[in-house]
Structures are given as structure tokens and as C-alpha cells.
Image (tube, rainbow, N blue to C red):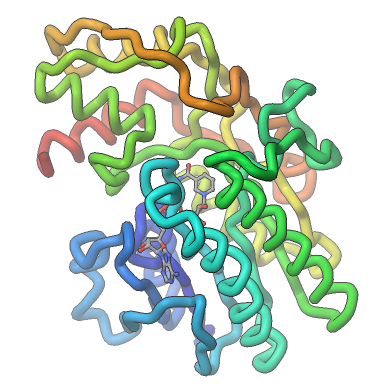
Length: 310
Ligand SMILES: NC(=O)c1ccc[n+]([C@@H]2O[C@H](COP(=O)([O-])OP(=O)(O)OC[C@H]3O[C@@H](n4cnc5c(N)ncnc54)[C@H](O)[C@@H]3O)[C@@H](O)[C@H]2O)c1
């Protein structure tokens, strides 16, 4: 049986990944320091004999025996990663060094949850993997963006220098059940505000676009990436290329929740990208993957979740 380590396993994406790995018959070790994750996300797995939870901060070394590592630990929303920016960089950089060291010792294949933020405020649309990005190195988002960029560098240096089996996925905005209700990400923000009948906060004019991938599609891509041939290291963009403006998203959420909320406009935060859309041609050809869940269906499932939990 495969022993799989998931760092950040009690978070939004990590908990869905643990579910899929357990369902596929893996022996899962979930490591989390519960900074943004919660026991509630994995409570349903706690009695499973093939699921083990360890409270640990990956900025410290970890000695365990595993065959595969999914490195997801890192706060992902600006509110959370800007709360303690030094710790955010440490989690990305020291965390990557520690997990790569573990992979080197155990000869495990290691997957890094990187991000579309490595492209910064991009000058090309959509972004392909060979675009190097336009990132501010000293702004409030830099702890996350540059931390993730440095982690990618470390992954490729371990691959070149130590022949480590690496997989790097660049995740674009993903949404779904178990998102943190107060992390300021737009889908959860809009849904929670609509369900509470509060004004829906739109930043800027609302004309800026994003593309949203439903969590089940994302996890499928991660699993395919981990199982892909050794020559496929990535980086590979994973996301949904269908673009939607923030105004359209707000309208859809209002319609699907039947809310009476009105829109309220606030200034755009610093370094907020105007447009972000993945080019997923590489994922399509290398992993035979593309997203299947429509925005409508994904929003319905996410709204159901928030109705039950808030
Ligand atoms: N959700 C997205 O849209 C998205 C987009 C791009 C990249 N990602 C990446 O995917 C990963 C998971 O994101 P998420 O949306 O599930 O976020 P999340 O905040 O829900 O999950 C992150 C998890 O990591 C844990 N964690 C944070 N620092 C840690 C540390 N030092 N040691 C151990 N555990 C730690 C948190 O407690 C949490 O459980 C992150 O690496 C994030 O950068 C997510």
C-alpha cells in the first residue's frame, strides 16, 4: 500500500485530496499546523485506520517514511498569508527545503502546490507555463508570490542536482466546499455575504475577470500529475479557462442563493491582477485532463455547503 504524505491536509484543498487518496486505497499521513486548516475538514476521516493526523509545522524538519508527498501547506488567501508574512515565506521556502529533504532521503515523488500568483500581474493572456511573470518583489503580496517562486526554484534544483522525482502544479483560483468562510476570497465572500443578506463587496469596477476551477476537477489533475511519467515535472497550469467578471459572478451568486443583497463597490487592493486565465493546453496533452464541472454546478455545491455551515 502506498504511504502518502499530504502537508496542509486539514486545509480546503488538502482535505479533499485526503478524501480521494483514502478512497483510492492509499495510507495517508496528514500533516498540518492548523493555521488556516481545521479538524472539522478531516473529522470524517479520523476513524479510518489508513488515515493519520499529525500536528506539525513544516518549517521544522520531519522524519517519516513515505512513498509520495503532496506539499500543500501554506496559507492561500491574502488575508491569511499577510497576517504573518515572514512565516508565509518560511512556510514556502523552509517548508519546501524540509519536504524536499524528506523526499531525497525516502526517494519519494514530491508534488508542489504552486500558484498562478507566480505570474504576478501578467502582461500576457492567457498565461502559458513558459511565461516568467511580472511580480513585485517588495509588496504586501510578495511573501506569497516570491515564496512560491523560490519553492519552484528549489524543486527544480533538487531535480537537477539530486535527480529527485518532482511534480509542480500551478493552481489557479479554485473554489468549493470547505473553503474558509472568512478568508476574503471572492467566491466564499460573495456566497457568505449573499446568504447573510449583507451587501456584496465588489472591488474596483467589477470588470476585472477571474477563472474559477471546482475543487473536484483540481484534485483529479493533481492525482493525474502525481501518477504521470517521470519526465513530466511541470510546471503545469491547472485551472478552468472560462473567464467571468466579478459583476457576473456576483449576479450568479445572488440568483442561485435567491438573496436580496445589493452590490457595494470598494477600491482595488494593491497589486490586484486585472485578469488571470490559465492556458491549460499542456495539462490537456500531458495529463489528458480538463475541467468538467460548470460554474453553475460548482457554485450550487458550494452554496449548499455554506448554507449548512454558517
Ligand atoms: N485554493 C486556491 O485557489 C489555490 C490557488 C493557488 C494555489 N493554492 C495552493 O494550494 C495549497 C492549499 O491551499 P488551500 O486553498 O487549501 O489553502 P488552506 O489555507 O485552506 O490550506 C493550507 C493548509 O496548510 C496549513 N499550513 C499552513 N502553514 C503551515 C505550516 N507551516 N506547517 C503545516 N501546515 C501549514 C494550514 O493550516 C492549512 O490547513 C496552498 O499551498 C496554496 O498556496 C491554492
